[in-house]
Length: 244
Image (cartoon, rainbow, N blue to C red; front, top):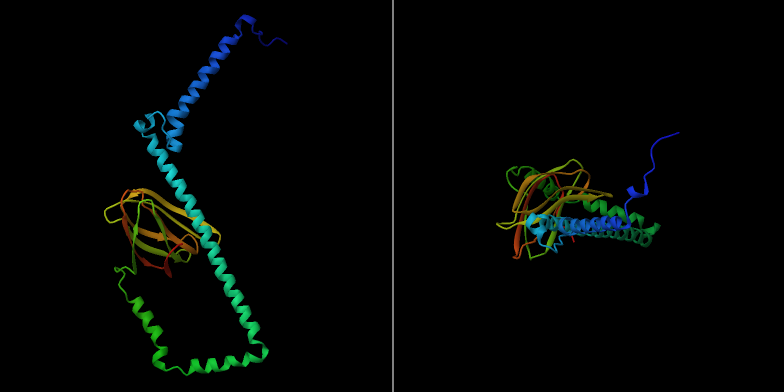
């Protein structure tokens, strides 16, 4: 069955033409690598054209965010290991206490109950009063306010301990300077990234927990001068803590 004519030898490219095409393709690929890929992906600009086109700045942002994401992951892993170690210590201490007590010392729990019942009514009423005072605090006032000074290149992570669906109103400011930030959460084997920003002076908003765990911010000072960061929070969270 006839389909098409086979090319004649004269129509085939010569060895010289193939070599020239290969050299052109290689030079084009090297140019794209030097002018576009290296500046935009790795902030490497050997020709200087990437800086003129704004590609080098794009690469710097990607590299910084990648570095901060790696540090966040390491911090989250360390926090999880520390939490597990605390739980194991508590379990071990409980088991040691039970072993030391023995069956014969079990009745010793009765005097503890008697001491609790013998507390004066005034002392037992302290906790409800404190709870009423906390509820009576106006919503317009901040519950917590903390400040940190970050040296050039230094970062810090602060989290709120929240239940799933809980909301916390926040406002943070670099007090006239700027920082890079990553709003995220972790806990119970879950992790989420809410928002990231670069060279931001302040932010106000509501943080809603996607799951029960630690939710908050990681800031890094990328300027050449120290930056004082102030965070104010209020809402449905049990604790504000600085992560190690």
